[in-house]
Length: 416
Image (cartoon, rainbow, N blue to C red; front, side, top):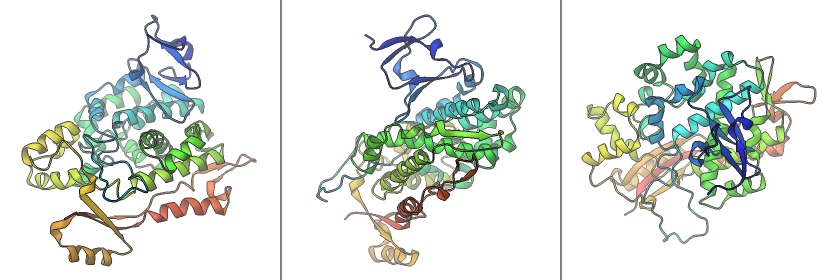
């Protein structure tokens, strides 16, 4: 049984970007294909807190390039890895939480396709032809293609070879995509490597779209589980992710945001995500889980770069079970590990010496996050200036203080 207003996919298709269909979220729609068959919900990418969901015609033109083992592999890599939801405030410390699986299930493939789709629509709306934008959309869709099995936790084992930016060309060559894309779309691997490192105007655009896409989906996942500033901010600003629709180019040479206030609200949501999840020590307790297990095997060559760049999380878990049968558990128990924050490396080291190395799970130094205050916005005179020039000192201080509050030297250690 299907509910809602019946509407054909063709009616929703925009000829300026025919492979990416925007489906309005403000009414209940029953979308059907050219022969009247329903478009299943699983085929639609949900984009929370925005005006549209996304449907990609993967069988057509450019976007069929994403029908490849190189991309399907990303469907087996969790976007947030072993991060866990923030611990609810006000609970007794004796109350413990455990999970039968990783709490967040959206994948790098979902993220990559959302980035490619939004990138495509933004360029199309700003007058870039299909031929002009093709190579850039490919790069946007492939920006995470070299994420290793185990995600961020594993790439710390060998950031020179396993970081997605550094392994980008290796993966494209391995799956024979570099030559194919060069022949079909004028793809240039050297320019592509600069773009995924956020260099140049198209690299900066990729950075912006990447952050918009992961923030919306991540915050929906967190807010669905825990109360806090993320949930509160999204409820107060239900269309905050429409910030992507405010991106406007000048002569295809530079871009900015046409709505400074919505950009600020988006950056606040992103700041809350860093504070409550991405940089939250409690949420990061298990974030080094795979690194600790993979590192010695990688060093001995038992597990290789090729293994990690051609497989997903499930393969890695099964592989590690053979070597660490007592470590790989069906239940995640973040409460088994505690953490402390220090202001300096010396006090961090002193604490480690005090409790003994056998109790230490891992240490790290967090340096905050980029606030986005340098993103450009349009003034009334159609000039581009950094956001910090137009929003006032109070809002600037708020963003910067949230970033500063996440800085520190952390020790994660096993409870006795």
